[in-house]
Image: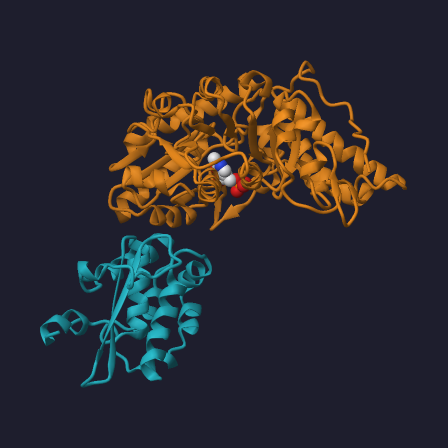
Length: 153
Length: 422
Ligand SMILES: Cc1ncc(COP(=O)(O)O)c(C=O)c1O
């Protein structure tokens, strides 16, 4: 693949200016469910475009009620893992954005060191949704961790 | 060992009915009185599992506090009481569906097991070239066991297709029926669309080619009365938990001659007459199909649920349920981009729908924030989702304890979701 094709992986702000500290900070100020969900859904709208041709069986994240796709690219020059996630559900896209903010553009050892549970703990909403099966949040996290492990070993 | 079937005198249908008073009825369901996410619970997922009245909860509690023992073992008073209550429950079910005899009432763990029992039992009856007819609107429970039977025997599965409204296509069933048809397994009511199938007519036609009929009544019995002798099907199945009774128990009704022709499903205690290492002979109906210790408190709970259900005048209850459906239909236009899936002329109060710009799972999550419980997903009916080319639907399924005010709150909630998020 040419560098150009990887631009969709690398040219976005997830893991950079869109990070969990910033998300948690904003989230703290939202006190009704309407605002919280609006915020999550808006985050999802910032996700980079997921290539249609990559919406295949291999990239499908299982255990979700909606369809969720996750693909990755390891930048050999920086050693950083880049992710792309997409879903056909708005809230799940928002959750995917939080997963991206937590894990994207990190080297595999950093990915594995992320204490995602602590982040979920801090976000009341996420604590609520992460407990329900079927939204795919757990499956997304698991898949990212497996990818990082696979590269690390 | 042959047990005596003790039957408690069951409630007769001619008995005085209790007026249907929605406010009173709601008080009978303790679970309804709570808040979810700071809002009063509105439970509209009755198609998945219905709530239980106090009478049912109390019957189960009383059983464990006063009568618990194994059944059909004789020898002591508790065992006799448990057996009497358990067999009394069987008689209650028999009366409820107007079966000819309690021999025709087999306890199973639910609809799913009942269908599997029949499909498994027909293995040696079917052969290559035979055909099994199901419909496009079946729950997976009424597809997969037949597919497995087809695989075992070389038979083929034939599917009655539907129209856009979610009704069986005119003439499609008749076109599939032939002397090759050995089994017709159709749902009485669709769990996704609410469509009521014309099963009486279908059973009659199946009979003209000598096919065995099984009707999946899981979504029918919570909404209207069924009569086995009038329907004249070979098998009819349903689950207690959708009928306001406990989970873990369901009913397989089978005509005595059909049940006698089926081999036992599982082997073990209770289902045998005499066991030697050389040969075992089986118990008579219904025990032949009830290996092991049965779900005793659940059977008693189900009988109570039926008592509860039958205490009201059915016409009043059905009028109430229809008024909920009509009201819901009239409010659809208040939600921009809302589309109802399943518009059969003849349906129970179930509304599957989509809202443009939202995934069903979004709708479910955002309604839950407002205390409203609905079901989202493929509803264990993937072939039906394929027909509509949908990833799933949102489904509100109503029970008699739901109110018009709840329907109104649902639509206000949907309108809000659509306005804020779609
Ligand atoms: C039409 C229909 N058939 C079968 C089933 C399966 O019932 P159970 O899971 O209680 O066995 C259901 C439950 O959703 C249903 O709606």
